[in-house]
Length: 196
Length: 155
Image (cartoon, rainbow over all chains, first blue to last red; front, top):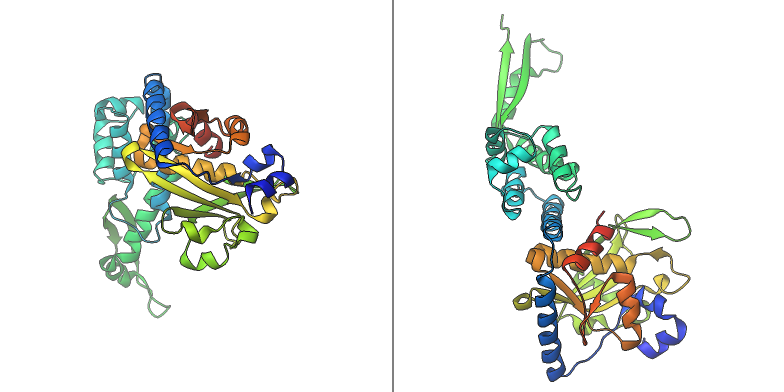
């Protein structure tokens, strides 16, 4: 429907609430428009505050995490550690400095970034608070969950190790097993068993 | 990101994705105001739906200008049922504009810019509703204004 027809039916407020209309510019007008915009952006860039910069960068990471969570399959690159490292780098922080800002040990931060440990819940919450609530704790925890589900789903060795602990009522085996996630990507089993 | 059902006030999760080839049969001029097929090659077209539902409530065509770190909104339309006073859902256009900002932010971080060329008579209304600035030919969102819109639509 043409703009003229729509204009007869709707108020300007209703039109901006539902449309962006096509506007044709000549090649010359396009060039001028691009130059004018570049000039205007140059001026406003100088006035950008650190707060805005932080917020925009953080929104970018939140958005990337959202995309990773929506991927149908688990991408081994898109781990909690990967996005944590990205967050720290985009904020232009040193790891030691960042660890202090969320009150954790440098060693724990390194373990989290390098995927040697899954994060405790309090780290996810501190990250949410650190990002001014832009990246929710649930986003961080869902990344961990996605990785864990992938690992459990694909670890055939783990299944084989667990086989002796399952029966269908034939002969009870007195074994107990405690699963410990010592290291992401490598499920380990800590077993205390009593064999007769 | 959510839209609001006008009659109940209920918030519903909005999902924005690129249109699939099969969607073009649904994107009629009667329902979505413009000929969307004609933009297939020159733009990337996105659709807004409610999570778990198939109906397309809004459509938007974007052009990316990587050398300028800018994304232009070429065209946008809410579906017929979501136009004017009797619309079923609120915030459709806002969600789509905020999505364009989010897309630009993901690619260009704090350098991101989203622009559109408005009809002159609507210029001030876009400025008021979406915090856009005017540079003589285009309306645009960047830095603080882009951040403000993101905070409003991605709370």
